[in-house]
Length: 63
Image (tube, rainbow, N blue to C red):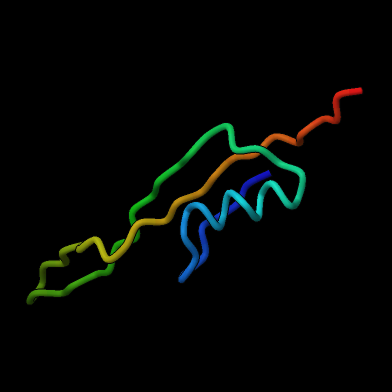
């Protein structure tokens, strides 16, 4: 299952939310988000923020 760090949420808060749902993080993915800026006939792409996604595996109860 994937968990995205929400706007206004810290990485630690996202990991805590994962644990409350019964998951542990096993992979961190970072993706840039770009905005288009037109300059005449040329289009430039400018990074505006970073999206952080954690892949989580279900925590199995040890018995």
